[in-house]
Image 1 (cartoon, rainbow, N blue to C red):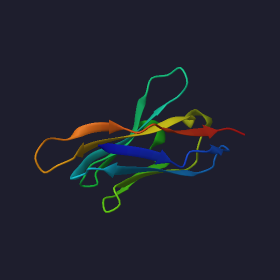
Image 2: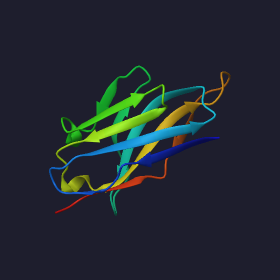
Image 3: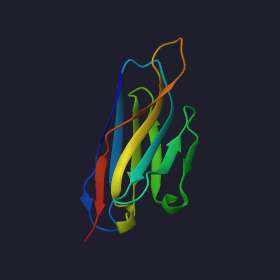
Length: 121
């Protein structure tokens, strides 16, 4: 079994910063792509940022230059540094990872339960 647990969500004023973490635990052989998604009330879940095993990153246009995704493979952890936060960044943030549990077999996608980020004055 594989578990993903997000943390770091909070209430922050516009212009503030937060750092989200996603810890992957359980039976893990290798973690491939790691991604952050978010879902605002009444809206569809959307991809915020992703990072490959090799460290290549991609971002949705609205967060480029403000958010930074990173990973620590030794700790099986992914981060999202969010700066210059805006009210429209308010959402539940979810991590998603493709995890290969054993040397034989392909990766399987797993979701965390999310952490709430609220940007408001």
